[in-house]
Length: 257
Image: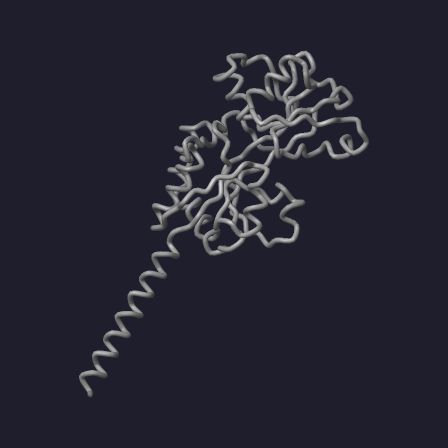
């Protein structure tokens, strides 16, 4: 009877140990929700179900340093924030506390320290640089984006929005004059102008028009502790992260005020 009791205790102990180990292993696997945009240089790529680029290397480096496994689940940009605030995934990169506020408003979201600086603004033909807000009647933008700084002009009908699912298509519209300006990420637009369209001087960023200078962050609705660990990672691995930034050129030409 005493032996049976010891065996039972041993069995229960083994069961509990295995359960704890299994739970611990499960906790080390997290899902990052990302955008399924095929090519969003210099930040990311997504092709044949595989997420890549600077964003992937940054997050994989974080996972490696902390002993985690990250799984990447991709969505179209118009669905991405809805899925995220509805509980899909553990982490989202990139994010920003000013993005998609109409979707996030009733949710508690934890944000990391700044990771990558960026500028979103309007690219116009060089001859129209500095011409002023009154010259923008048709504003193009990537589908799902919000042109910050143009809300009043949109509401009073001065500015109409034309969405495009393709960065190259959006920039071509601006080059050919079908739109008066292309609201987009400046680094990405310059990459497309230089390396895809082969027309580096066809458009230029107009700093006189409404634009945003900010940073890309990591966010989570579920794991503030992961965000705290990521902030430590940003400090501890600053040199390795800077090498990645230089390799991909994610902050090339971006000067913060």
